[in-house]
Amino acid sequence: MNSKPILIVAGEPNSVFLEIFFKSLKKNNFKKTLILIGSLKLLKLQMKKLNYRRKIRLLELNKLKKYKLNNLSINLINVEYTQKNAFEKISIKSNSYIENSFKLAIKLLKNGYSDKLINGPISKKTFLNKKYPGITEYLTKKFLINKSAMLIYNKELSVCPVTTHLPLKLVTKKINKEMILDKIKLINFFYKKNFSIIPRIAILGVNPHCESLLKKNEDDLIIRPLIKKLIKSNYNVSGPHSADTIFLKKNRIKYDVIVGMYHDQVLTPLKTLFEYDAINITLGLPFIRISPDHGPNEEMIGKNVSNPLSLIKAIKFLDKN
Image 1: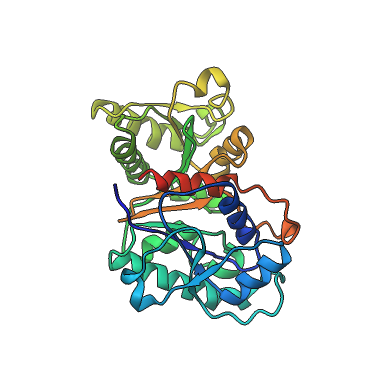
Image 2: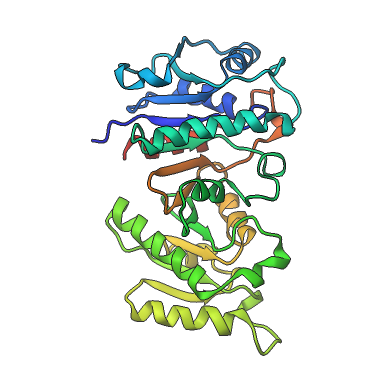
């Protein structure tokens, strides 16, 4: 069994993440050690605000390999942050703190101390801005990875968008055969490695009903020819399927993964079906990276009513690997 600890970057400080982290620790006994990377000051402020009590164990970076760790206390690598209140509005003030947290995690992943990362949600608008579409792309850049995929995983059905956080008008300009092929290969490898199966993959078209009045369209020029090629290469794929019917129960039970051409084409129906019972896994990295499948949820901050299920599922997935 791989006994390396799970690193958890707390992410956006003004989010529901620490709340769901506290709830996850309350409800579960995890086998692998959890190491939180975040602010000691902020942790204490939110523990007091949310009426959560647990001992905090501060860890020194240069002594990590000497510690005998467990989850009876919160194992914390402190990242300095000057926020005065438990919760404030999300802003660019948090950017250097989030960046420093990720830098620490990346250092520990690169030196082999851990091979598992969970990150709390961040604000794409403030932290990533226009430089990266999402943390998937942020991390692949940091590790010099050219090919990656976002898999929103549920054991009954998972989805993968070929393009991620793109404005809709840019989707068709971005889609190409190589991009779709890369996602299929990564999905295939992930399922074979982790579950010893060749996944059944449905590939969606990009146009309504996989049809277009235009003579030159993506379904005919890109997607159909690629699917034929994949079938000849013994991938268990089919399509292109129409997005408006593939998620019907009689259709979706035939597949392990549905690959869509853009973000909301597959994430909206999956979240409708499973709500918080899904996790975001980045495929293609030299370690396993997972995040809960939700954002900072600014409207719910401090109310202590957020659902921790997605984070619990993320930790449990890594607990088994």
